[in-house]
Length: 452
Image 1 (cartoon, helix red, strand yellow):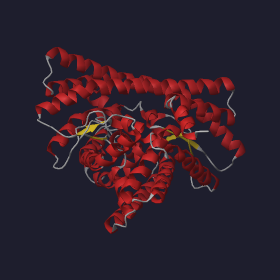
Image 2: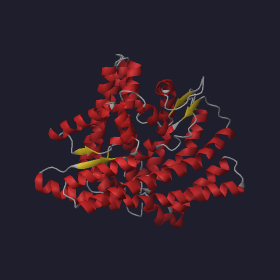
Image 3: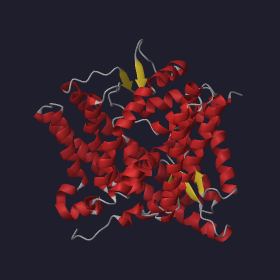
Image 4: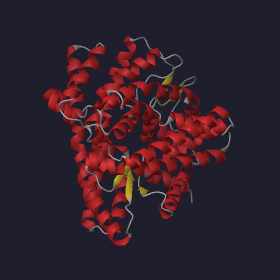
């Protein structure tokens, strides 16, 4: 039996089918009534599909505007941005990719049994990100064993990220019993030092979430209005005609308004699931509370998340134009989920902090994409998952955790600065973990009185 083909066939149904099936199975295990388990799974699938449609619409709408803006800034960069979809496609084409299901499940099970984590990761579709790390590390270090070890390290990091965020997600969004285990959230680690420095600057300690802005600026803070304004500015910067500019404005505004509506399906799916799982744990496993790890779109009802990522679009284009050594124009990956997800979870939805952190750290992703372009291009040609024109390069402008993957890869070659850098980065992750275990709900910290 060709197990690779079997795995590929299962993955072919997509996260919108695979994850709900897992939730239905887990719901039945934890004692949900079959009707409620099926309903939770279907609502979760609806949420993923709805969010995916909205994201695709946003990407398709703003990508031409990003190209137009690049045209009028004179950018001509050689690497083609194929986004996360292209990265996933070529990774699943690697013959060893499916093995990382076993790596993920084995490590998760051992950590659960040894009480090193309370997170049970159900986000199996994104195992490709672990396989991608292993491939990248292997290509640079020359050691397949070290590549597998680094893939395992990423599994551990994602599970501990899940442990970190669960209480904040429950407080911020009302989702009990679930968390985010996506490596995108690792961006919070490198943002952590700057975010701590912001504690000493008064303006960053005021209320900067969507509800606070609504009290201060009224209708201008509504997602549909903010989206329309951002879309109009982006269109005008790209020299759109008045008609096309208004079209883009209304479309971005509409998509921004749709995100919270689609996110409601996550609430309808995860609230009964979380309650059932909590009751099960109280009854059968006293003293422990498990959470289920899911993909980042469960955060989609956060207005701050989308405002940050859309505002970062023109900023990323400008950086692409001015950064020396950058070789990629953000198009397919122009919406940087790493900055949005990491910033949201780190700051608890402090919009000003999220935007400033995004501006500071956006160059890291462009340089990461530029550096890894050769490896992405090699994997694309080997897997034949996508066609790469002769002499061209492909890469991913918002590549996840580029600093972690870079340092792990070069550590495998025995590079002393890289080894030191990796140790420092993992130590910083440990400090962030300890900080969040002590202060699990940062959203409360930044809510000051209206007199500030």
